[in-house]
Image (cartoon, rainbow, N blue to C red; front, side):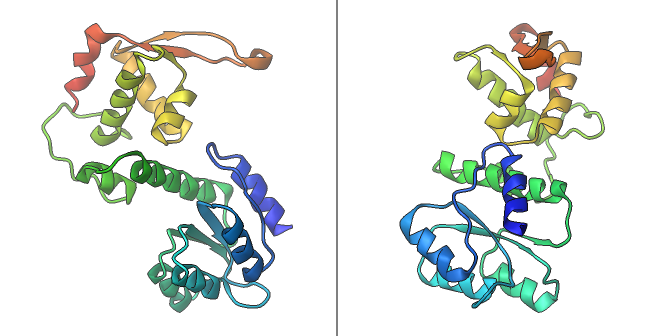
Length: 227
């Protein structure tokens, strides 16, 4: 039942699909030997060896897979060992879907960053690792809730896709960057207010409003002054 609930949660986050489920550590290892898997949602408490034992075995075998713990274990010794073994996140049950969504989106962003380029900047790495934004470059102050690093990423994604297809939706932009649609929508609305983006209202399947946007190059400087 818990595995099915987690599968449903994962299916709600763009860019993820469940490759398999395992009832114990041995089943998990058998799956990992047969097929590539990027990420495991792992419990500490399982039949047989614990989740920590499984992660230790994964590291000993040098398997290229990441782990997010989803467990009721909350003692600091267990959490500390999980992090030392390289868990990328640790969720304590019970938790809300939003917390799992945040963990998956952060993992997706880091995964794309590491697989998409041979090198990264300090700003990109800090953002991926959740470090505070210490960008001190001069620029006009942004509205509350927006930051320069993310604005720069949004503008870069918009300009890069222009040659392929100048029109895009906020959902398409969110997928390209690896951020949530809610976050990207704030920046899109900000750029529309600056007339850097032009909005064209439309409708998708079953009459759902789906707005499309297009870069207005002549007004791009209006956004660049905030960088």
